[in-house]
Image (cartoon, rainbow, N blue to C red; front, side, top):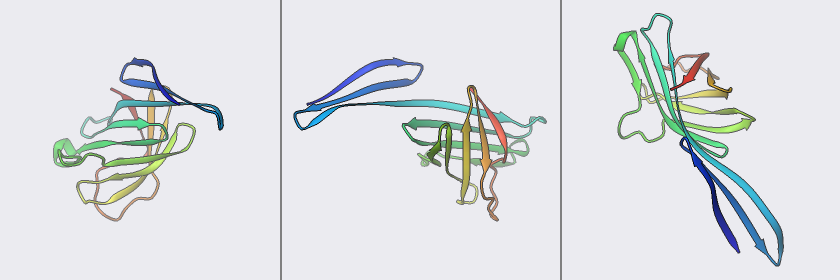
Length: 143
């Protein structure tokens, strides 16, 4: 028998409780959380911005990014055809690693996101020789 029960929905988060029960196994419960979030960074001069729109599904994060530099002269943003320029997997509690695909140069940039209570730190793990407009070592705040 498989039972799916929605135990709450609030602020873009859906919580589900999965319960299985059969004569051949013990009862197992697994909580799974899906959430959407938006994060933004702006340089002190205001000439550069970077944002992330993310979907977290358990231990996986997907989403899109947008980097606008030099007052809009350099743009590295997901376009309408890009569904997931961000692809990350959890490596430890609140730490995710994977790639952001630069739409400026079509290069995959290895990154690490570390989530704190109201911010996320973005670090480029291995810079590329290609041109891209994804800042390194920044803290993005929730929109």
